[in-house]
Image 1 (cartoon, rainbow, N blue to C red):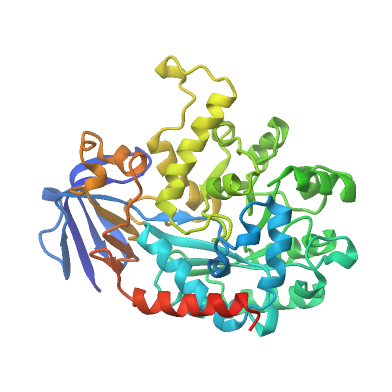
Image 2 (cartoon, rainbow, N blue to C red):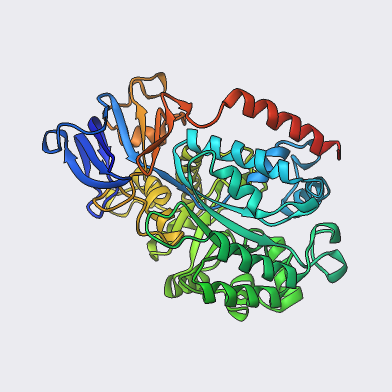
Length: 462
């Protein structure tokens, strides 16, 4: 059995049920699980590894609930810089058709490296096209080299242009093959046990890229194996129009028709949902991955996150694809969520006077979305807070830095309000992924070189 002692943190932010923030706080960890939490003088004096974190803030590892790792290869493509979602997709689909297994692997490592350096300890990814022999296995194998927990979503597209869908026929699959591969992946990789490092999710891409029958069959397969379901939903007005014209229903109502409502489902975006649809989420337990940067980048709109939170809907944060963000900085995304919620409050004409009814998202609420909220969305009770019995997933940031100067009267708020920084430490299951601001398991310089070569080849169509 191995032990790890974290002590003398300037502030230990637990995000536990009491939302305790402990001055001179620490953790005692045994075999990757938190054994004790409290003041440093209340913890054991020795361990196999000891981290003295005086001058640091320690927080639960952040949880990313929506991403497309492969899109790191197509950041800031000129013809896709200034379009809305549908235009952006139609520009990039032909480029993505050139992806290879090697591209999936290098983009996975790149995205996870960015996430790790920005404080992420658990990441959910949505891979929904598999050209040239690519498989979700390529992502899974690459992810093991980085060290983060992974929820790998077996995405899919089956409704090509010839059948009235948005994607070209060149990037869609046959539905029988999708379902067969989905079952294979669950049986091969899915680990439902507490402290799991890898779980499989079934994730048909969107209402405009798969059939209703594939949605239903995916839901039934997922429930047979007790795995979660994920898709894009209500992201844009164009999607809303598509659903009404093709299916005769608004997006959320369409999800009811195809058996995609329940505690095992979470949707990316949910920008264009009304109060009745938010109530559906509340009553049925559906979760939401809020992706503020992508929604701004593609001019999709502002999701009504504060209304969802008021209704106790499960909400997490997602950086979304690195071609609609164009990055994977999760700490930055937490800040964006807070700021964009404030923009919406102003646009909605909310009264900003009076602390008791303040409609502005606070720094701590934003942090909660990225920790406890993300865990709830992914269906995990073993991560999201620094509590006894939870996984030892934590990050630490040195407070003596330029970005926080003048803001240390509230270090917790400073981490969110001030300019986003890279973390100094990132531990997953009590093992280091980032130490002294450097990746432990990857050479960043070599990774960047390999990734740039792959991106160039992809754009040239090989």
